[in-house]
Amino acid sequence: MENLNTYLQELIQKHRSNTEGTTANYIPELARVATDKFAMAIVTCDGTIYQAGDVEVPFTLQSTSKPFVYAMALEEHGREFMRSRVGVEPSGEAFNSIVELEKQTHRPYNPMINSGAIAVSSFIKDQKGLSREKRVLDLFGAYTNHQLAIDEKVFQSEKQTAHRNRSIAHLLRHFDVIGDDIDESLDLYFKQCSILVNTIDLALMAGTLANNGVQPQTKKIIVKPDYIADVLSLMLTCGMYDSAGEWAYTVGLPAKSGVSGGLLAVVPGKMGIAAYSPLIDQQGHSIRGVLAIKELVKKYKLSMFRSTHN
Ligand code: GLN
Image (cartoon, rainbow, N blue to C red; front, side):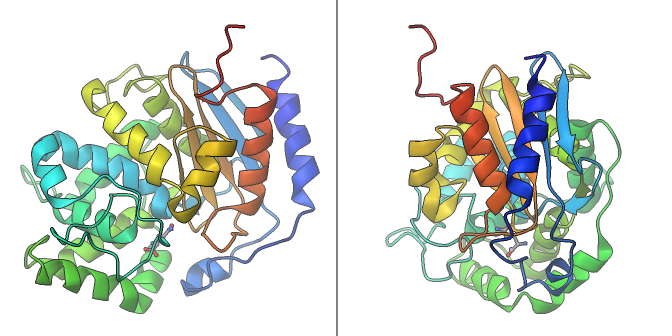
């Protein structure tokens, strides 16, 4: 793996000239970011970091926050409660689908789409004198091993334009999936989406999931190992929304994208992979990030479904 830094550099050079896609223009602050930025990072389970490109450039987590807040809610409320409120089936719909709730139960299909993630955020409450916002920030700070902050401008920008997510939240309230604290729950959801990280931070988060919940550098347990399979299986089947099937077929790894251009993939027991580049496709995935991770995974045969023992 000594040549990995060089290989990541090659991937950056190869795909940086690709200018397909747009920034996430439905959130005004995200529409304005520099579109030439491109970074990749890998954190192996022994804590080694490989990196190339604009790894210091900060961006907001957006939907890459969803698996981590789901893990937090699982730890707090247990599997049974969470499954009674949010399903575990791929929806086959876009991340912001408003129509799709399960027919009988009216639960959101899964925690990786907005409806499920808004429900999940509503279950994170103030605790022991700590606000829900602080608790979520502290959690992400434990993954990245340094204190994180919220991008206030992105938060306000999303909050002021989030008519669709607001409608989803009210629908969830109507079906008693969430309680009366609709605005507080949405605020937490927008805030977790607005947490600023860089590509190394994102790779550390992915690396922690790869390392069975143990942060590869601090060796602290951030997620109970018992819940790792819950999170990774949902990332595999639902993390890439309506292209999750294509992703599982071509890449074969649990992953999660965010409309800011962050993308993370997990090779269980081996490494976390992260990419950042803000031009996204129709599904909301970083175009350069998807291309580069696909190539990396193919070269090193990292798919979960590809046996290396032959
Ligand atoms: N905050 C964004 C939203 O709710 C996150 C979406 C995403 O990253 N796919 O629309």
